[in-house]
Amino acid sequence: MAVPYYFHQISLSLAIILLMMIPACASTSSSRETNQLDVGAWVTYWDFKRGMQSVNNSKGVYQDVFFFSTHFNQQGRLELIDPTKNDYRSAIHQASLGGTRTWMTIVNDVVPLDAAIKPILKDPEIIHAMLQSPQIQTQHIQDMIRMAQDLGVTGIDLDYENLFPKDRQDFSTFLARLAQELRAQNLALAITVQPKTREKFSQGAGAMDWTAICRSTDRLQIMLYNLHSQHTKPGPMATPEWIQEVMNYAKTQCPRDKVVPILKVSGMLWSKGGVEGVQYDTAMELKSRHNALDRRNPINLVPFFSYDGSSETGMVYYEDARSLSLKIHTLQTMGFDKLVLWSLGREDPALTPTLQELLSGSPSTLAPVKTGIPGSPEQ
Image 1 (cartoon, rainbow, N blue to C red):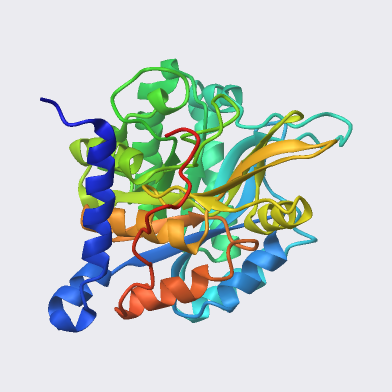
Image 2: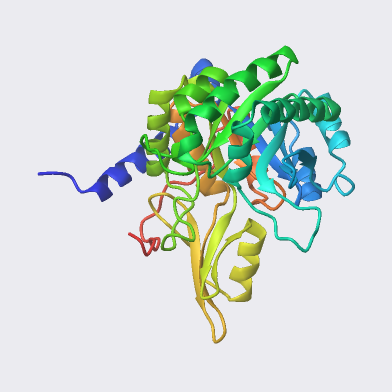
């Protein structure tokens, strides 16, 4: 008789938790292998000051800092976002002094000079136009190199989302050219991609040929979030089981040392007004304001709560240090030794000490799952 899927979930989570409870002193060499991890994180332009505070208060934790700093204008040229408000050069210089690798992230958002015109977020058209013109490609690459050298970053990260499937081959060809020109300037290349568990040729994740990308670039960074979103019922941003599906597929497409998982440190609110992302601090404020009961899924350890007031109703799933710890250990048991967090500034304050313990090889503070904890309404 087939074993129900629910019991497979329990077995996986218990196995991970038992592994985490093994004393670090059992074997110095095995402890180092288990806990050897390179952690990176994004600092966004809208949370720049708080993000840099998190970096500065976490000395030794982040080996990579990605500055979400660059978008397109209507003419298809690259521009720094809020350069007068955010001192990117100083922040990059400060981070580099400690040996941290720094990256300029470029996103395919198109922002007009006229503030009255609405920006186009994750615009596939701007990338399609670039791919169709060798001259525009040359200008695009020159702009990247000029800006990267001016900022003093270690490398460039492309976050080009929702691309057309018809651009799949052309994009891979462009990346091969870009990588070659960046290496000539001693610049690394990372590509941030949307998740998938199998090959597909749809817009977004299907437009990215992971195998071809890994032949050219230094890092394929995979978003391990939005398992639940505005297109689904309420649920966690990611689960260990889903993470395994995505990363097992990635291992069939790329060398493991080039694959870098991305974990989201925030959450999402589903309410009558729609669905929106919520940072950890906002989730805590909502929970306190509505005197909501915090619950935790006993399988994936993701916290959630709901509220039903006279004027507001909603359900929030979010990430905290404990739920992220389980995801990190899931990735480590799969052999992945790098990860990046999206994004810093408003995360669970307990995350930094948790990462410091993990990187030092100390035993995990994650408590075993207790029985009787209310489960998720999706179970």
